[in-house]
Image (cartoon, rainbow, N blue to C red; front, top):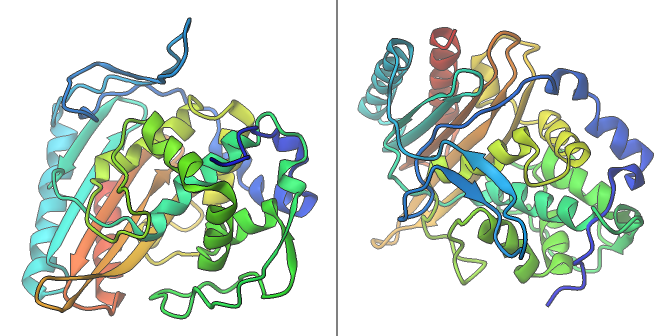
Length: 339
C-alpha cells in the first residue's frame, strides 16, 4: 500500500516547472465539453461516474453510449482516414491502425478499427502523472519532495525514441521536476522512479476509477488498450472531472509542452496548441519476431473547433519514420475535414 494517498495543490509546484507547465495555459482553456462515445464496460450506460463514495457519485463523463458516425462531416473524416490507412498498409508502412476522433464542441465522434487493442507503452505516463496530481490535491509539499536517483540503470538505453533531457544518476530532483522529464521528454528513468515511489496500487487507481482494465503484471507488454479507452484520460482532463480545475489545466499544459513533434503535431498548421503524448515500443510475437507499435494521442486546440485524436499503430519494422508519416497524414486529414 502506498503512502502517497494525500494529493497536493498546484501552488506547490516548483517555479521552473510551473512556468513550463503553464506556458501554453492561455491557449488551453475556454471550451465547454459534452460527451457522446462508446461504452467503457460491458454494461451499457450513458454516464461514467466515480465509485467509492457513500453519498455522492461524482460525474466523469456523459454520453458514453455508442452512437457511431452521425453526420456527413464525420462520414467524410471516416472515409478519408480509411483511405490513408489502406494506402499505408499497402505500402507496408503499417500493419494495423486504429483511430478515434471526437469533436469536443459538437459531440460527434468516429472510431476506425476501434476494437483493436494495443500496448500503450509510454502512454502509461499520462495516468501516472494524473495519479501524482490526484495525490497532490491534499498534500501541500508533495511536488517539492526531493528524490535521489539511486538506480544506475539506463532505462532509456533501449528506447526507440530517446529523450533529449533526463535525470542523472546520483542527483536529486523534486517530484515536479521528474514529472516534467517524464511528460515533456518521455523519459523512462523518471517514470520508473515515480512509479516505484507511487506504488502500483495507487497507480492502478486511475485505471480503476475510469473502469479500465490494467494488467495484473505491471511489466506486461501485451496488447490491452483501445484508442477509445485511452481517450478517457484526455477527456476527463479536458473536462476537469477527475482532477480539480487547476491541476487539470496544469497537466494539459505539461502535455502541450511535449517535445515530440513527428506524429499528430506534424500534420497540422504550425503554432496550433496540442496537448498530447506518444508511446512507442517493441512487442514480442509468438514466432519470436518483434512488432513495432507507435501511438500518438491528444487534444488539438484549433480556435474554431477543439477535438481529440488518438492514433495507435502496429508495424513490422522498428524504424518508425514511415509510421510517423502515416500518423501525420491521418492528423492532417482529420484537421482538414473537421471544420
